[in-house]
Amino acid sequence: MRIRRDLTPFPLADVLPLEPRSGQRVVTMSEGQWDNLLSEAYAQGWILLELDENERPVRAYRRAE
Image 1: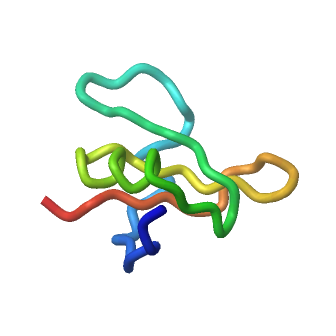
Image 2: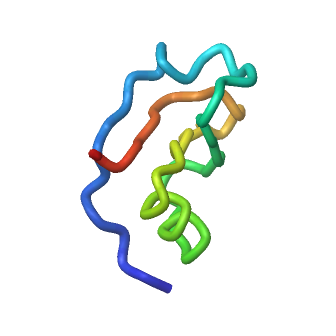
């Protein structure tokens, strides 16, 4: 497992509501979760959508271009 690095915040308003958007790929994660899948998705430009314990979106991250 890779160590979680500093993530670049991404506006939730640009992700929600979740609907098909050309070229936008989103993966969900729990608060504080980090693993190789999330690390690789982030490195490939996916948006990480962080959900709270009630599965509500609380934060989003995307690697700066």
